[in-house]
Amino acid sequence: MKKVKKILALAISSLMVTSALTGCASNGDKKTDEGTKPAAEEKKENVTLNIFQFKVEIDKEFKEAAQAYTAEHPNVKINVETVGGGADYGAALRAKIQGGTEPSIFNIGGPQDVKDWESRLVDLTNEPWTKQALDGVLSGVTVNNKVYAMPFAVEGYGFVYNKEIFQAAGIDAKGVKDYASLEKAVKDLDTKIKAGELKSKYPNLEAAFELPAKETWVTGLHTSNAAISQEFNSSLDAFAAKKIDFKNGEALKALIDLQANYSPSAKSKEKLSTVDYATQVDQGLAIERVAMIQQGNWIYGGVQKIDPKVADKLDILPMSVKGGKEDTIPMGVPMYWAVNNKGTAAEQAAAKDFLNWLYTSEKGKDYIVNKFFFIPPFKGYESLQPKDPLGAAVKRYAEAGKTTPWVFMGYPTGWGMEVLGQEIQKYLAGQEDWNAVIKNSQAKWEEMRK
Image 1 (cartoon, one colour):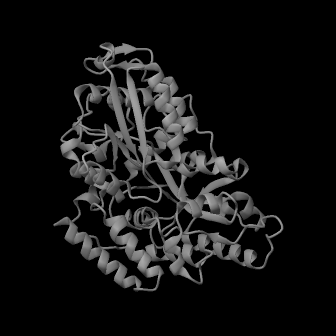
Image 2 (cartoon, rainbow, N blue to C red):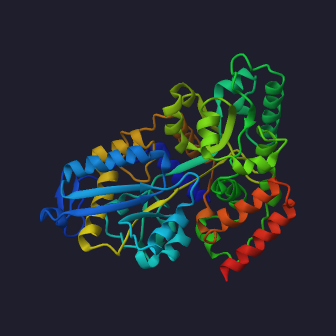
Image 3 (cartoon, helix red, strand yellow):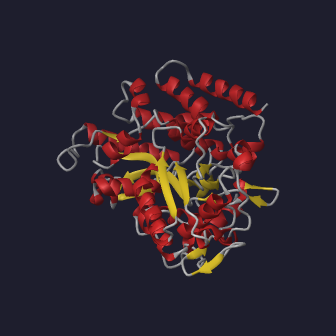
């Protein structure tokens, strides 16, 4: 754990050390100023890349990056399809491939996805970016010393809050460093909202939190990770585990209850299972209808498009686990880019070149940091510091070593969203108690690991 914290702190604080990546070339490719030129392009062979990706927050910007690449590589056509947000990307990917449509580039999580998709993964070990990867970011997609995917970014999440609302309520956010102080801050805020003390300045403000229980990735993956990362040290440990003890099961309940009890649906929690990402972010935090939400630095771009002033008021409170590690935020790699080995040799070469261009060319780097608002998982970004407050907040936690790992990438396939996330929905709807949530989820983990 200490090693991971040190790695991430170094990664974010230097953003990202030294050593430019441009000009590197993989085997059989010709070096250029803008990255690498695949053999397919030198022959002017026309290639079509179909990219199936999950990050809805960057859909528009990613398509613009693809257009910028094809402008420099006219023999390559890129089609981008994005499925994420309220949709289950993993299920959508499986359906797409089962239907006979093979994407050239797609996304995988950690070790469980590597196992699930091993028959389609191109070995990327010799790609130039692997030598520039930050320590630790490739571990979840490395098997027998072979690297099978490229990391998206480094991300962190916690309770994203509106600093001005907290100030108006007389709450010192700097003092929120453990679960007890978080709970007190939420209760104080709730009291002032119900008393109407903030109504004149924030007419839309309804509640402290919004909990999107419809998004089982929020509850079943991200919220659970805060507690389960106290039990497993890494996604690899989770992946190897035949059972789960839920040592911090009550702490997980506390995190769920806090968000539910101080949401607009506090008196009718069954409604929380209809609350989605857009309701939480776009129609919640972005319009100051709620003061805080459980999300990460990836929401900045979306909030900025709705209200730049609100976006610049945001910061991140720690996601403290009652009785466990407090004053920390979970930090890790959200997803990886994988190249499909079912494509032709020319398609595979072009796919690898596009990814190299995106993360190693100056134009690509600009998209990564200034348009995607990603924290890069590679060295060579020393001149590109995060300009958004949420990226800066993640950097602050990393520098202080106040992080916990993302272990949910090692959960059994579908367990987080389709089992635990749905069990939490039943709990919120009053259909079962918390003890049933834990027991049912434990039993399903063991069954899925057989």
